[in-house]
Image 1 (cartoon, rainbow, N blue to C red):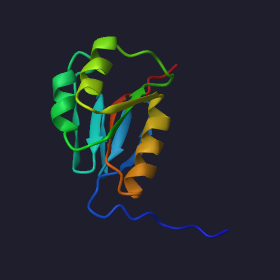
Image 2: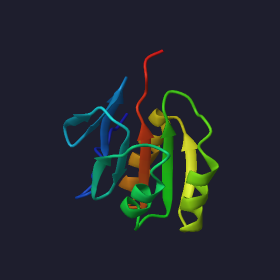
Image 3: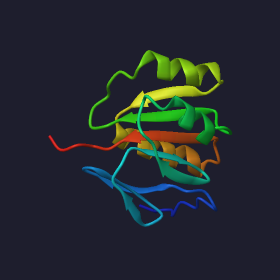
Image 4: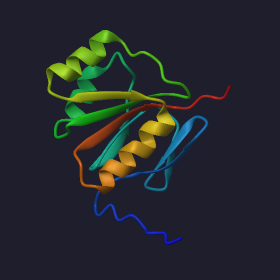
Length: 120
């Protein structure tokens, strides 16, 4: 089997994740996280749609990771993003992280809004 290293160029991938953290550019972030090709920042969750809109200005799709399991997100949060022309894909945070990285490696205009994976 041949393995190919993925080249993200200048883009910022998610290096890893685990219970309560995400690893971005070698740094562990223990908070809800926004990440796009240009960087990452913490956010305060679904009550803060405006921060997400500003951070996701140049994307087509936002992957929303809802923690360990897929969960519903507030209708108001989704509506604000969709009204701005941003597609919203809901999944657990592990799947959202992996999907973000794959599409980022294809130079797609994507971002992720991730809640940490909490212990059971």
